[in-house]
Image (cartoon, rainbow, N blue to C red; front, side, top):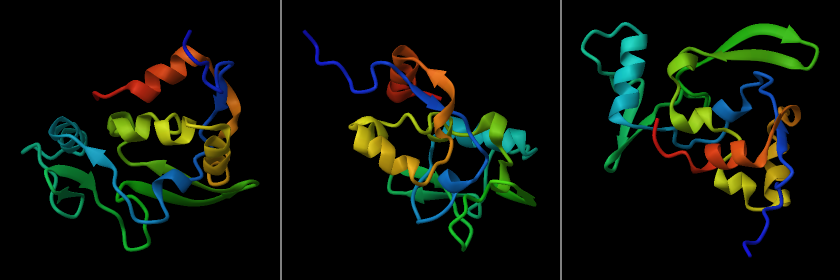
Length: 146
């Protein structure tokens, strides 16, 4: 019999648009050539490419770039203050990469309840809002193609 996952009953998540998942420590937002073409088309770049200000090569892969303050190049800070903090948006939200679309249901966040709660310390949308059942979570966690 397969061992049950700690999140078998599901988890809650609703994005609060805090921007914490799109800023902070340097890292990588992996994009495929298809992602790059989709983003370029969305931004109106007829040639279907993004320049080095928006995407960088890391070994054999590509990653979105970051602003000097650690924000994703596509994170837009609205400047509006809400009761629970400032709001942000994504300039490419409809075509954002798979990595962004599957947050917070990443394997590293789902290994243990402690890992989930550690991620929750930076993400106020975790443990609130929409309920995702086990099948939905596993589908997102295992998703590999954009």
